[in-house]
Image (tube, rainbow, N blue to C red; front, side):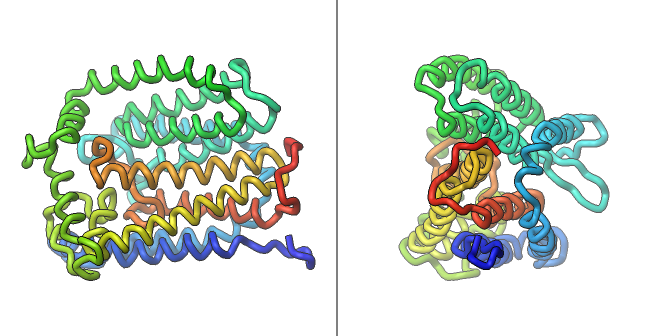
Length: 372
């Protein structure tokens, strides 16, 4: 808060987020113009939809920014329930929209949205409230967090969507660690969690195929390994400085989901290694500012909430980049602020508004120890 009593946002964070969102529109046009033209007859089809989502997000931003985070603390149970209900509704036959073999969307006719994007952040709010109420983490205090996380992950896996499940699980573990969870807690949680992951992979043949394609994509160049190989081609063609903006070759229907999950591959092809480093540096700056905001938060709930939001952005970015570079098996997870996806963009912009609110009302160099 400034001396005049006015809330002053974190300008560095705001500039990074706005820059990434506008950069995302540019890259989405480059990555999707040809596929959009061939499929819809409009080269700007994806860009116009994303621009509309960005405009709506920016219009909603000041309202979220002005809302006190105390409201989120009071409504944490209701928000968690909302996330779980939306995840349940998407599984109802005739309500959930199926695409590419998964039912992850709710189609209202005039708009389609993905409940898992909302549930990620409602869970962060709930976990933040649980951690803020206790000065230390015990197995008993972890119970409510684990139940909420388990229910959220189970519903997301039913879609199925393992990538978001992994993201949610990792973010929850990070928040528990920041809340003071000990090594013994993670050790006891890790054994059943690992067994569950192995079981989930074993029961679905397509997941085993994805892992096999990850280990050796050239064993199935026209099957499961196709997308990863095309991503390699894109990144390799980019070299140090790239082939130039709008000059990607892989976007001509060679690279699937070039405008969404694999947009980082197009960035690497057109802007090269240097462009990728700059983009990752901007994400790194967002994470850095988020952690600073968390440390300076005026109460424990704001501290955990800021850390949780930052963790979602950081973890999802790392998972997306790891996939397109072949560091982990392929999953469907968009790059925050950059990939095509209206629900994802809206939730990330709103979460940044919450971060900015926490930053604006911070008055101490380090977080206080009050709950709220």
